[in-house]
Image 1 (cartoon, helix red, strand yellow):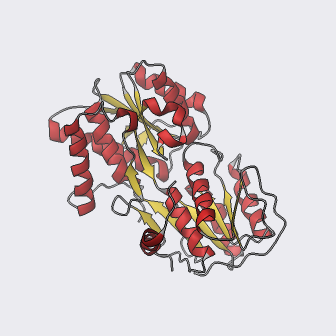
Image 2: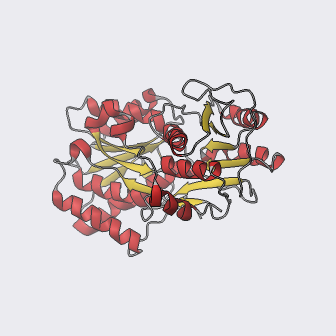
Image 3: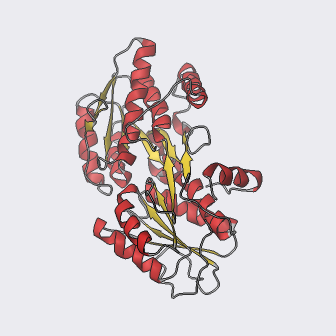
Amino acid sequence: MRPVRGNRLVALLAAGGLTLAAAACSDAPDETPAGGSSSAAAAAYKACMVTDTGGIDDKSFNASAWAGLQAAKAQAPGVDPKYVASTAEADYEPNLRGFVTQKCSFILSVGGLMGDATKAVAAQNTSQQFGIVDSAIQGAANVYPMQFATQEAAFLAGYLSAGYSKSGKVATFGGLKIPPVTIFMDGFADGVAQYNKAKGKNVQVLGWDKAKQNGSFAEDFASPAKGKALASTFVAQGADVIMPVAGGTGLGAAEVAKSSSGKVSIVWVDQDGCKSAAQDCDVFLTTVVKNITDAVETAVVAGATGQPLTATPGYLGTLKNNGVSLAPYNQFDSKIDQGLKDEVEKLKTDIIAGTIKVESPSAPA
């Protein structure tokens, strides 16, 4: 994660619509887990994060948010980042309440699945500043939403995957059938459809039917074994590019690709896979980046420096503001035809300009 400095931080603050004063922190006892700071006594601003069930080291979603807290600590004096991991959905509300008791300045819920728990706790603690990734809670003025138009970047990945595929079959699967997951799958399918239209081809998408909003799900964000099983099935059906939208479960798909002797490649999501899961960089065609890290960093820095946060409009990451993007092609850069790279770049320009509109039922309003 590169530091947000100078004019770039100002621009991000403006784009994010950061306009509710964060609460001051008290020096409550700090039971920081491994990886957190233990300097609570000296800290002026406790930034406290509750993970989703994928865990802090999912190489993806939760890890991105934690990186944002760490980056905020480097940017603003007195920021004390800490987290607690949820192992089941039943943990969400108790974990949030625990941080309220510790008088955290900013409490971050990582993931749309935490929406109901966050709404309940926020409604009972209206002077407490919350934030949530991948959700917006109606009527909750003290919950700052961070949402992402990931269908835009996934569209580019779908087009790229269709153009790179040798078999004419690509695939995607999710961790759970929830909007923050299916939005990726919608964009991916539309990108493949755009390639087919432009080239007169018939590249197939396995694992997701956008029209029916139905497809393949592991029902888990932390099971590489389930990801391996799904990916193996797709490979047996002929797919040679796979996009898992499943946190740590997706690592099982990377394992399948690594054993394919170069025949199968992976499109990772959330964090650049060559940084978050460097051991698998040789199979990552690219990554559909959801810039959770910068969004979280910007919000925490704003709160820590006395700038207000408002629930409306909150933050929406798009291709235009670099809230979503395609990661570099890394080890695949020399393997991808330059013409295909140029087409992907042109599509990005067209989406930003509004010439091409990428839509999804799961897109943030």
